[in-house]
Length: 324
Image (cartoon, rainbow, N blue to C red; front, side, top):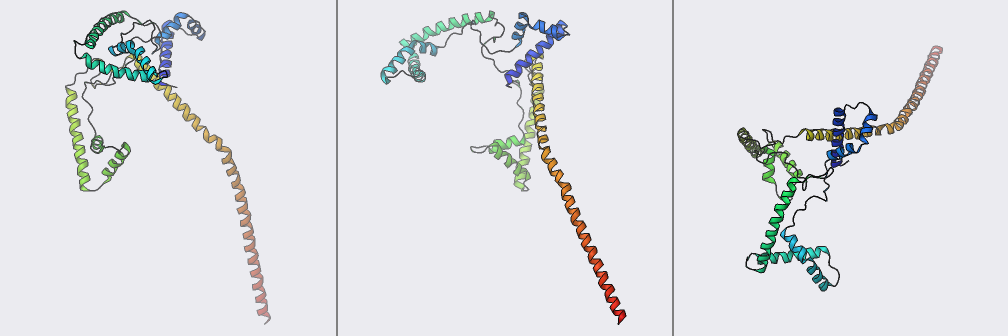
């Protein structure tokens, strides 16, 4: 399951739980009856975060380059077709438009040139269109199921103005030894070798790195004493989550935990398939024991028969000596 789907499921689940508590719904049949109403579905759709763009949203005015491209695309396409014979690809047209725009921009640096006058005219129209666009966007409200404004921007998890966390001795070691062709695996192995080394030079280098790391840590602690967090961040520079974000984060973590547990359960079931083979091996053991037991019985019988034969020989020799 993708992360976006998990967020949607968590948002819908939280909405239904809140809806049940507010409307005092105790039976499943009552909830189903409520869910079949169009009003309920509209509220559910509004609770789902969406990246779908509203087709009726005010259009943002195009930049100068796109204005230039729109006015010259047909000419460039025709010129390339005459030159190559075949219909040009969009990539070739765009590449050529970029080259022409570069030439146009160089000439437009002179405000008295035709290119400069044309650029000034386009810029004036763009500024007026941008003012109109911003005024429309202030009153614009996205309908349910559509995103509000532009692309969804990721909010920084830490205050960018907060003092940066100090580097550890290992991180300082990596900064000193990082170079092309040396990855984190090699750096980690080198750090372990350095720590295990008994030479005085290596011990001195480790002590120097640890001292630098301790100095950085103390400087960071002093800077945090005078740090004033921006709006939306705590005294440690971490972003303060809203109740909705906390609920979604909790639900996503719960879903991932249940998925991992179900995966471990399926893995636990695998050894049970091998049980018959274990039984077979255990079934063979009594047979082996029986064989060894019968072998030991035959050995005892042989030893006893030897003893009997020895006694018979001794008794015969005694009888012969008596007769003498």
